[in-house]
Length: 260
Ligand code: COA
Image 1: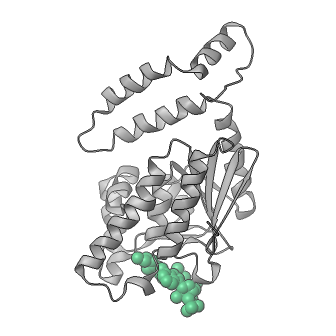
Image 2: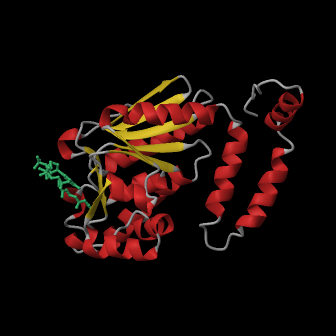
Image 3: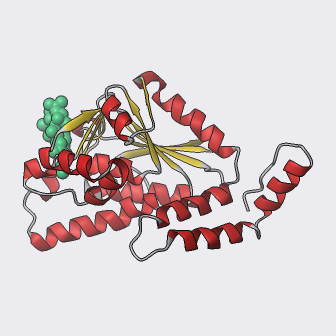
C-alpha cells in the first residue's frame, strides 16, 4: 500500500510510524486510519520489527483528533459505524498487538489522538504536549475507546473531570496522573523512546507478546486475567526463547533469543 498520510520506516528493529498531515495537525481521517491499520498490521508480521514507535509529524501535534470535517454531517447510524469501524481497524488492533507500541506524544493529543495514544502500550510525552478529550464541547462523546481507557489509566474521577470539562492537561500533569511514563524535551523525545525500545529488545519477544496479552486480559469484560496469565505462563515453557533464556542464565552468558 502506498501511504499518503503516514510515513513508516524500520531501522535496527524499531519501526517508526509517523502520522503525516501536519497542516491538519495530523487529524485522523478515514484514509489515515486505513493506512495506519495497514502499517501496524505489516509491522506486526515483520520479523525485523521488535518495537513500534508512533508519533506525529511537525512540532505542534501528535494528533488533534478525529477529522471533524468528515463526520460533521453524519446521522446516528453513521456515527455508530464510525466508532465501530475505527475501534476495530485501529484502536483495538494496536492495543492487542504482540509487538510493543510506544506513543511519542509530541504535541496536541486530543480526542481520537489521545485515544490512539492510550491504545498504545505506553506513552512518552514532550514538554509541550497537551492532552484532552474535548468531544463534549462538540456535542459528542469520545468514540474510539476514550471513555474506557482514560479511567483505566488515570482513575474514574480524573477521567470524569477531563471528559466533562473537555479541558486539556499539560505533560507534567499527565505524568502525575500516570497517563504518560516520562516527559522529555521535543528534541529528546524520539531518542528516549528508542532507548527504551533497545532495552525491550534485549528480552524475549515471544514472552513480551504473552505478557501484553495477559496484562490486557485484566481490562477485558468476561476474561479472568489470572487464568490467562497461567495459560500464557505455561505456554512460555514450550518456546525456544524460554530454553535459551534459562540456559543462558545457567551458563552465565547473555541470552541470544531466537524469537520463537
Ligand atoms: N479535525 C479536522 N481538522 C482539524 C482538527 C480536527 N480534529 N484539528 C485541527 N484541524 C485543522 C484546522 O481546521 C486547521 O485547518 P485549516 O488551516 O485548513 O483551517 C488546521 O488543522 C490547524 O488548526 P488550527 O485550529 O488553526 O490550529 P490552532 O493552533 O489555532 O489550534 C487546536 C489548535 C488543537 C486547539 C485546534 O485545532 C482544535 O481545537 N482542534 C480540534 C480538537 C478537537 O476537538 N478534537 C477532537 C475531535 S473529536
